Amino acid sequence: MHEGIADFAVNYAAKKGADYAEARAEHSEGMAFSMKNGILHAAGFEREDGIGVRLIVGGAMRFLSTNKLSKSVLREMIDKALRAGKSSARVSSKINMSDAPVERVSYEVKQRVRSSDVDSRGKIGELFEVEAELKESKFSIPARFLSLSDDVVHKYFVNSEGSRIGSVIPYVGFFSLITVSEGAQTAQRTIQLDETGGWEIVKGWDLPSKIAEEAKVLFNNLKYGKPAPKVKLDVVAAPEVVGIAMHESVGHPYEADRILGREAAQAGESFMTPDMIGMKIAKEFVNVVDDPAVPGSAGYFLFDDEGVRAKRKYLIKDGAVNELLHNRETAFSLNTKSNGSARAMDYECEPIVRMSNTFLLPGELSEEEIIEDVKLGIYMKSFMEWNIDDKRMNERYVGSEAYLIQKGEITHPVKRPVLETTTLGFFSAIAAVSDKVGYHAGTCGKGEPSQGVPVWMGGPAVKLKGIRLG
Image (cartoon, rainbow, N blue to C red; front, side, top):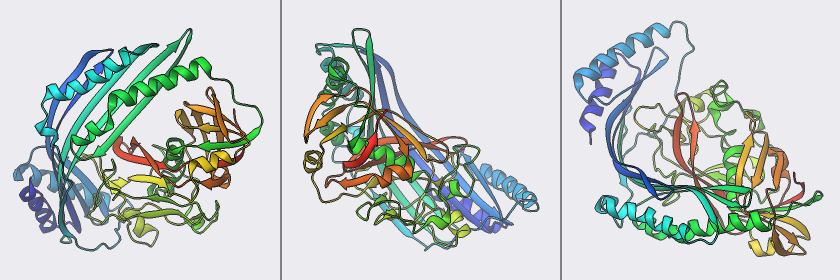
């Protein structure tokens, strides 16, 4: 790792007049492979080293990054950033950061089977096994895209307040996009799996069986699916559908920088305002958290990219709006403390307010008990698409795997049921929450230039009362 060059950058910036300085030195390496319709599409090994430095001078913030890890390059870049900061400080509003404890710690996610010990042939073999299983299907799968990747990120954070934090986090990821056809009809399904850990995780996924089962579900829905009833009914939303709703209609609108207007011209605004904290929007058994410390999760970290210790944030607690996602800058603006929600995609990007793993906490009923209590409803197990407006209020989820519920029994498949509601309407309709949380992975996009970071989203199954589907 590059601790020495990061320490130098911070010390040099402070010596030259920066009011605050921080540096993130990163080293990452990994492999990635993709296959298209049974043919190896791309393969590569990547190794990357670089440093990102953030400064505050005269109330103006500047960010710089480089993969040229030399003191002379950093001196020149820091000098230029300081001059620009002093000039812009005369005309721009001042940036302040909330207080944060000094942290000195190192941590590592262990791999039981190191990804680097598995050769490229073994990794490509995983994709060929999935392809072989799909080819054995008794129905048509005309388009198949598969990819598999691994990466280990070494990071060292240092700031002028005295924090020194080292981390080593390994990642493994899988993505597939498959198209199934039945006569003139087609349906697509994307599956994304991301976790932190070693190659043992990939083996545990059992990818051939998992993806083949997803293809079978698509086929059955195309062949046997019927339209949803055009009446008010109950919707039992499974963890995948609940998860995307928690991410899009809770996580994003609770980002304090979005609320303060920073994202307005990029990814949109938020229906949330700071004075909504304490507002009741759901039953008391509804609790939504953002928690980066979930073991094995895609959004895992113990300290954020501003050196603040990670913690579970209760965005909705006992059915009421409870807290927002903050970095140190937004926390100061709203007279609170950072809750460790600053993330950067890599050393080239500034840390901004981000989610990690956002999910609904479990209730007390089993999923079976919830379904048994439904006289007429839809069980929406997965989604094929979603839409939400730029204030994160009006939303729409189109079901992929879905079934009709009649008198507490799951019956035939339902084709493309559309759940269209508002964020407040969704939460006020939650009548029951099951006792088992499920997660699925995603890549959350935000910022300009865009930053994609790995996250989990999820929750238990919930019953939404009195919904009219499209």
